[in-house]
Amino acid sequence: MEPTAESSATESQATESQATVFDRFARFYDADYRDFDADVPLILEMAEGADGPVLELGCGTGRLLAPLAAAGHSVTGVDISPALLALAERKLSAQGLRPRATLIQGDLRTFSLPDGPKKGSDTQAGRFAFAFCASNTFMHLNTPQAQLTALEHAAHHLAPGGVLLLDLFNPDIARLLEVGGVMELADQWLDPDSGAQVLKWSVRLLDLAEQIQDTTFIYEEVLPGGEIRRTVCPFSLRYLWRNEAELMLARAGLATRAVWGDFDGNPYDSGSERLILLAEKV
Image 1 (cartoon, rainbow, N blue to C red):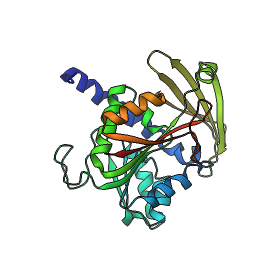
Image 2: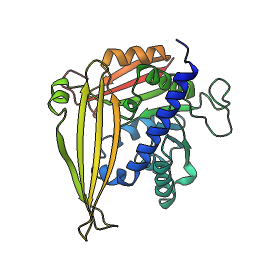
Image 3: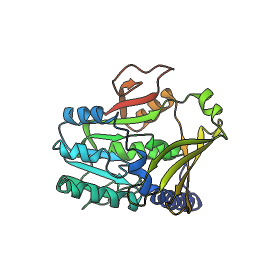
Image 4: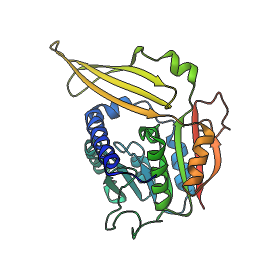
């Protein structure tokens, strides 16, 4: 079905709204991920095995771009949030890694590489040996068509034989229903810059028919003087089932080569925590 002018306008508004939410989330991002590096060895290993430049889809503040660049890889990161990219720029520059990295602000369905027009005549199409989308980022595209379009766009930028890695959570419906509507204290930390105690609250609602988990993160900062400041970040995740994901990849011209249930490469099964798919451009 061809997109209408009305649907295109609606998608544009949704994209702007999503960028705004992620901009709001940006200043909490690195603290939120401060203890998480379980995926780093796998991403480094995959990049090492690829003979060419690396593309990250949804790079955030450069949590994974930085170790890749430090290992000597030429990296490109795409993100919809200018605020997240500004932090990535600062992080890479502080570590002397900026010359190895290209940062692009854009939608995963439509982004353009530097010095090249959009999909269809992009002079730098097919340049990447390895692309990846980590930490459930792919699920922020919350319709099947948006997800498929992003996969097609990723495939367009992969070289023949290039590999795409998707890192998703494995849908555990019992657990998703259990936490539905519950306000949970997900994390807390001390902000060294403001001295605030930061409490991260999470509220999630499940739409089984649409495979959507509507999530709201509330960052509550208790400042030293007693003032309380709240930042509300609502977003939706569309989870995927294994067979659905493989069909989408095939439709995009990508053949699934492996499906893992964790970052150690163990086979995927119904009890796995992650759903990690590796697909090759054919």
